[in-house]
Length: 516
Figure 1 (cartoon, rainbow, N blue to C red):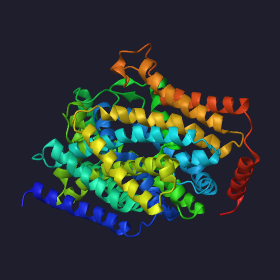
Figure 2 (cartoon, rainbow, N blue to C red; figure 1 turned 90 degrees about the vertical axis):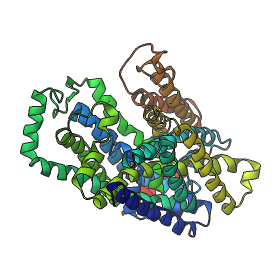
Figure 3 (cartoon, rainbow, N blue to C red; figure 1 turned 180 degrees about the vertical axis):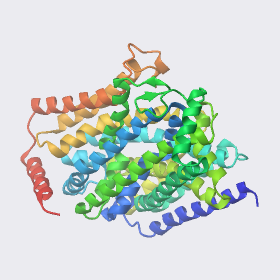
């Protein structure tokens, strides 16, 4: 039996397990709340690992190690920003959002929470946020399918890209369609554990092969002297041999702001059974993300010595797979490669589910026909939407060379700026009102579009043809700042929230002060 056959067998077993989990929860999902929020019954460990696994995607095992491999440790600043942002999101908003979302008419989604928190009877907040979610997450799902297709092709070179992409898409859709939120969370928990083991074991094995830490560092110095690696490769203040600017570091760290407005991540906070257990989730999530991000950087660093000579981003991103297949027996390597697929799938499944809930729970229920639909029928509508969005995502993903990761960066900024400030101020400032929240959402979203188009080189729209001035600043920074200012200014210039809203806010404050 050749290595490729063993890899395929291991991956098939893995797929059977995740689809089996989906079938298990298919029998346990009886209403819309079960399907899109798990009935608020998650334990703290599943909540923590599913949140982090759904966040990282293939970037953890492909993109970040590849960047470190090519440019050096200076590429780690985005990882540092993500670790800091993740910790403070768990610390500051997780418990408060869990309590508030339940008190605000048992809000099941972020869009519904905005609407219920501000008593937006006309539904403007719900509609606009649902549309933003739908547009960006369809692109996100496509990026996951592209990643799955490329990963399959790297593991099984005989597969065509289209076949590989469709196989990955079908498996993701299968367990998301069947089991909904709990299936997604439990598969993400499994995938998060698999990712953790793989990201630690592979670089440690490679370093052992190279003779240990001291030997590896000596070889790095030799490669630098031979111009095979950039100058200051191990200096975090340099990237590609050039010193990092203050703007570049701030832009990288700013990725952490995205956590406060990321719908598929914050929904995990609201799904935990006991709000007081969120401190456990925070600790587990923080340990997981710090270890995984640190070792992802280590993969790139060790890989530059273990297998030098990879040229370009596409080649460099394969370093994890190269080390896994070279250092381990086929069965173990197959499990490690399954972890790579897990990293990709754990993000795409969450995005599919949030997109489905945006239509079934946030948009369709507002129509007369949808308002009278039973919970069971709404749950089936969500399942149908999962398939519909997956089809659109797969069509987008048919182009193997799509610059989809640029769109993911764009969407991360869009969510962070449009939703992040609204979430924070809705939870912490009782004076925030509907008009302020609406202004912040719109201003944040528009700022992302304008800044990326006109003030960052190579913007998504026009590929830089509309550039006015290249600031080099990631659009999430001005988007977040301007949205926050808009919320505060408009809220102060318009009527105060009603007594009902203030009383509910005070109830949440009282609940937060209760001892664990």
